[in-house]
Amino acid sequence: MVQTHTVKSFDEELRSLRALVSQMGGLAEYQIRMALDALMDRDIDGAAKVVTADAQIDALEQEAERLAVEIIALRHPLADDLREVISALKISAALERVGDYAKNIAKRSTVLSQARHIQPLAIVPEIGRIVAQMLKDALDAYGSRDTAKALKVRDRDMDVDDLYNSLFRSLLTYMMENPQAITPSTHLMFVAKNLERIGDLSTNMAEIVYYNVTGERMAGDRPKHDDTAFAQAPDASRE
Image (cartoon, rainbow, N blue to C red; front, side, top):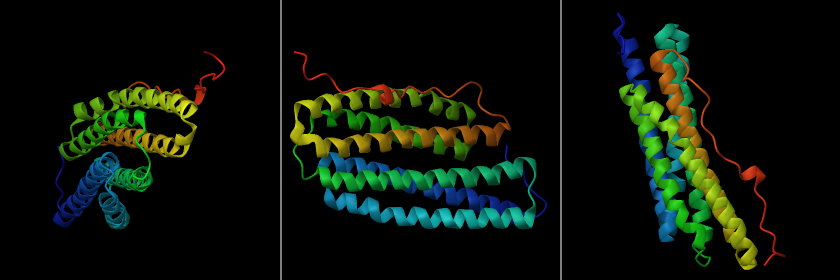
């Protein structure tokens, strides 16, 4: 439960900070949705809207940082209040990065819209669906201080890793068999990596929410299953 303070303006400042973070979250969700639609529909105009929206997220992040620093300087928050302010700072920074990744996906979708269809592209919508839901749930957990929902976000991170690993290997094989598609396939690989990173950032936010509410870290190590660093291209000499 969020405590109230004798100085009402302090409560108003904390509410304003949370509202800024929530507004950033809504824009980040919009960017991801639009970026994925632009990719799958070859929508250059939609991609341009994602790039434009990123400036709004950047501006909100700067405003959230300004307000958080002002609260720390003037109110000297302690315990729960300090966690609340620091959590807002960290989540706003993570959302700014989400916006950057969504913008990068949109830019690459513009290049991919001019290339012929790449078969492994079919895996991307599923990665995007899971990542978008992870972000939504992390933001919902922040808004409602729901630690159970935050825990579920972290549990889904491995699903994203598994799909990313699958796409990575599919693209390696596809590029070996279709050398003319190496450039668009490389762009698609970066798209998938951007989505995987958004999943990581959503998990980061969920962990921040958990700490903000409980004052404790989530138990156990974060589940990770990205083994692409060990992946090798198939041996073309084998039949």
